[in-house]
Image 1 (tube, rainbow, N blue to C red):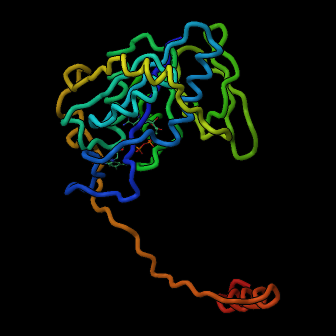
Image 2 (image 1 turned 180 degrees about the vertical axis):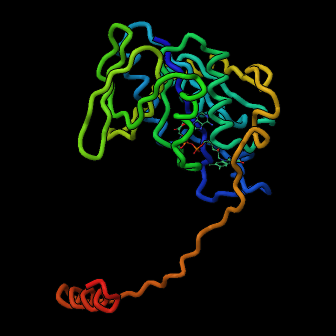
Image 3 (image 1 turned 120 degrees about the vertical axis):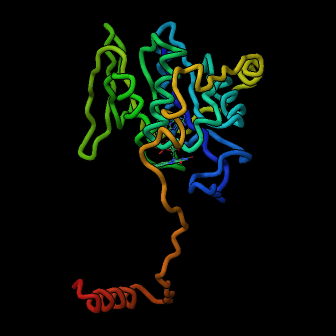
Length: 262
Ligand code: FAD
């Protein structure tokens, strides 16, 4: 089975800076794996351990400082890594990002069996990229995936975690799955993995390599744009009370009555 694993690099900082186009400043900021994509990686590694001759090719779109993150993926057991990087991709919204990643998968791994994405990215937080990639690749998608069940007769069986329970779904042929955060601690790379990872090459794909043109990528290829970005300053003031349980209950009751909730 050939898996295309989509991993996003996110800035390793809580001090988010903005560019003049109201986009997130990514260049010059250390990157880490999007925390939710660590579970997409675990999902792919589980498949690799259960389904014979599975290979995992990691795709990430973003600036060059992704190298450390990609080497970590190799150290954990991924087979190939692809950095989709070109200044022309800057400013892409989720539509242009989906198109760019889909074209990169087509160019580098045309005979893929599955595309694995995370739940969402902690910086952009839209959860639109996975479904967009599936749309551009014209393949079915399964979202909210909790676990892998089996892969047999060209059919993938996975569980989905829904608000009212767990369902098992099957999908035939190549498909995209968006994997939820899991309940276990993700694994750390072993020393042999880290050594082997340093020997592997990182493939870089530019706009020309993936058969796209300037008007289809980056800001130009993005039908949406951020018109304003700002930090929300709360206008609510907090009050602190030192009360026992009964006094607290009275206080809450009176407050709710004054707000006409009770
Ligand atoms: P999500 O959709 O939440 O990510 C879901 C999953 O998709 C991830 O877990 C991962 O598996 C995969 N994935 C997402 N991004 C990547 C990636 N880059 N490589 C590999 N896999 C990935 N950003 C800018 O820098 N400049 C802009 O001008 C800009 N404009 C935007 C305008 C709008 C309206 C919106 C909604 C976003 C904009 N962004 C912009 C943010 C940019 O679109 C996102 O960073 C990017 O498209 C991914 O979306 P997301 O962060 O919401 O990821």
